[in-house]
Each structure stands twice: as structure tokens, then as C-alpha cells.
Length: 495
Image (tube, rainbow, N blue to C red; front, top):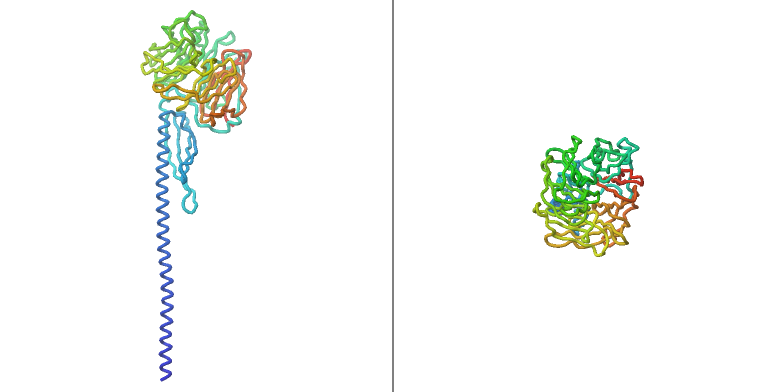
């Protein structure tokens, strides 16, 4: 009996033991299941959070790309590489590549953030932006800087040697770089006859002569300024001639035929035949019209608008007399900005009615010296270069409001130590051409404009013609003249 009871007790204990083990296993399995469920739920939450963060980043990238599109419409030169912090979570960058056509930029925007698990993440969007305003005869200089401009690379060439006439002088008056070609105008002297040259600059440091031309075989007047443009019928050079009464101040050169297609004289500008009056001085082309600036006339307009849509039959449309030479011109939408030796160094004309240009605004620098010499604009900022006769700033930074609404005001200035014959602004650097040097200024802090690097020395003969320059892509092309009036081409880029 006792034995039977002991067996029953053992059996109960055994059952009890198995039940406890089963419970332990069940609890363990339940813990695993619950843990897995929690992990899945938590992972799903992280995925959801990452997805939401990525969606916000994509929206920010879209907004950033749309901003670039708006800037391109305002001013193509405002499209440059940038980096910025958007907020506590996101940062952004804009990468810009100018395409070989010079009028299109590939813009890539990136929004970055630190995701879960301390992982760096980003979204990118890309788009092509075009320079609609400048595509025909516009600026081919890249506003985006490339390379090390602290250490520029400089190469110099004698124009006489480049054209195969080492005994000639060829005093350079202007240069225009356009679509892998360099166009050069020179004065006519006893040691040279050709006054217009075209070089292939596909290899920017190895210019190759394509053609040369004498613009006036009878009067030997020479040329002083050039604007090259592509039209529906080909590429043409619109050049300001040193002639006035004798022949005409504007000549149209057919580049492909290498011939002067037309010489045109301004009908209303009265001159006395002197080389110092009423001659061509500056020229700009836009949308089928040439804007020609003359030296001071006896009477009649120094600023002239000429319809050249029919290159063989140009005609005068309108003009304006400023009582002085037009040293430089800048066309922005329906306004033309003129740099002159007047008390008002800057004159802004409304040319919405081409037949009747009207003065809208003027600017007179605070000091009483200096002539308006060169101009450049980027977005809401206008840059004015001057000639001066004493210790006063030659480089001025102005606001650039809508001329219908406000007058430009002075923001900053810098004393350069010489006449600012030309200036080009790229991103945060200003490139300035004086009589004897090529300067690079930092515009990072307008309250303290400083030299970015040591100026590059140029050939200089101490008189006219003063140096001239242009930019294409990441290269500058400078024409200057030495003491014997011999022309040289300097090519400068970043290292």
C-alpha cells in the first residue's frame, strides 16, 4: 500500500515538473515572440521616420532647384556652387558645371542629413538651365570659379609673332572671346595693315591664327572695339571704327567670308573730322541691334541704336546725346547703363522705346573726380570702374535696383591705384584690368575689399590704347601694348 502511494506521489511530482518546464518554455517562447514583435514594430517606426525625413529632404531639394531656376531667369551669372545649412537637421549644396556651349549649366542640388544609426544620407536632383538672354552674342565667361585663383597661370604671346610678322607692331585695342574663338581689333599703323584677327582658342593656351583682315585699305583708320554674335545667318563681328566723318563709325564683318560687309556712318552725329571727335568708342550687340557709343561729338547723339537684322542694310533707330564719350555700355532687359566722363559717371537709359531712349537714373560718386570707365552687373549688384586723378576709389560697388523704382546707391569702394579699364565679377571675386596690371579682389566681405592674390604685371606703353580683356570659361584673354606700341596677348587661368 505504501509502495502504491509512493508511486502515485512520484507521478504527481513528475507531472508537476513537466508542467513547470512547459511554463518556462512557453514564457521563453512568448518573450521571444513579443521581442520580435516589438523589434518589428520599432524597425517599422524607424523606417517610417527615415521615409518621412527623406520626403522632407526631397521637398527641400525641389525648392532649392526651383530657386536656381528663378535665379537663372534673373541673372545667369548668379548660378554658382554653394554650400549652406538649411536648419538643425538638413544641409544643402549646389554643384554647377558649365557645358561646352557656354550658355547651359548642369545644376545638381543635394540635401543631406544624418539618419538613424548615425548614417549620412542625402537626396539629389539635377537640371539643365539655359542663358536665354545671352545665347546670341552673349557673355561666355563662366561665373563659377574653378581651380586655384590664388596662384594664377599666365602665358604671354606677341601678336606680331602669332600672325607671322615679327617686324609689325599691331597695337591691340579690344578682344572678344566667343565660342572657342578669340577676336582681336588693332589700330592701323605704318608697320601693320591688318586690323582684325580671328584665332582658334580650343586649346586656350595655344591660339592658332584663322584669319586676318584690313578693315579700311584706303583710309587706314583701324578699329577700337568689337562685339561678336551668332545670328540665324552666321557669325558676324560688329566693330567700332576709329573713323568718323570719312567713312563711318560702325562696320559689320562677315566672319566666315572674312570681309567687311558694310560700313555705316551715324547720320545725326556732327563731327569736324578730327580723330578725337565722334569716332567709334564702344559697341554692344543684342537681339538684332547694335548699341554704338561714340567719343564726344560737336552735336548729335554719342549713344546710338542701329538695326542690323539685315546686315547689308543697317539703319539708325534712335539715340541720345550725353555730351561726352561713351566709354562702356551694359544692356539689362529694357535698360542700357552708360559709363561716361560726365559728373554723373553712370547714366541709365530706358530703351523700351528704341526710337526714344530716355534717361531714367544717374549716379554721381561722392567725390568730385573720376570718369566712368567700365561696368559689370550681377543680380542686384552693379560694379563701376573709374579713372581718377587723385587718391580716390576707382572700383565702386553699387546697388542695382529696378531703375524705374530707385537710383543705384554706393555700397562699398576700393582704391586700386589706376584706371579700371575693365572688370568682370565671378562668384565672390572681382577681376580688374588697370593700365599695367590684372587684379583679383575678394568680395567676400564688402566692408573690407582686399587683394585676393598678387596682381599680374602687363605690358604698358603709357598711353592709349589702354589694355582690354574678356573671359571665356575659366580663362581670361588680355590685350596690352608695350612702350614701342607692340601688342601682346596674355592668357590667364587658375592653377
